[in-house]
Length: 359
Image (cartoon, rainbow, N blue to C red):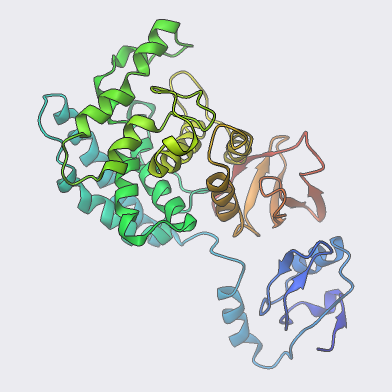
């Protein structure tokens, strides 16, 4: 395939083949319509020649090229609103369900399942890195975290190759993993400062309490019930309540643990401020060395970062930029373009992404 020199004159041309970095990673995909920013990125990566197609039918190819971009960016507001509305309904319903469970009545999981199914049917509108829960308040953290953990657990299970027949059960495992917190002293859960040892001991009872509440729910399989009991167990045996290790922990619980940790870290809570989503991913990566299932963590990080070329971000030093490349080796530290200057965050370790911006 003939190639041409990279220059500003190539704006509007279409790539005839994938363009690779020197390390063999895909920098830009075949079919992409080149922009001025793309030319800057190519030059930053020292790409001197690229294969391009003819300009014929440019307007039609532009539309096709946008569809062939590296992945979905952000949905239009009117599309996202439909998902947000269903999300709000689910949170409201779950809040009532959790309240009713305090009376000792059977947990009506079967009645709540349609809310989860509706959200799953629109899962394409759920971007884990950029979704902002509507009407979120710190008082309703438990309910938002439950829905978010359910959706994220579903996504991770699907990415990891869990059978499609089990995906709904994984989602429900995520939704009900913390139901035991209904039995915990709310004064402790809503305490603004660090917990005392006895208070920590009390909070940890939510795992056993949750399992007991779900134990006889016929619409949940055993894996979903065990997720409530085991989502704080860790691969090295230093989790709770049973100190289980590795294969002793159900795969559902391992999936839910990752989703729960991600949303807990990125949400404002009574006793802890929210951290940036990319910093949360780095924390998960660190926890994969002994605490969390490494392959699941790798899958999670790779999948939610691989389609974010073009995403607008704010760095911890206040500067605004755009992700131009995600290295498979350092997916939580992409290359960011700031007014024409490319910053490699895997090298500039003092700088990190503070916030992913919606457009």
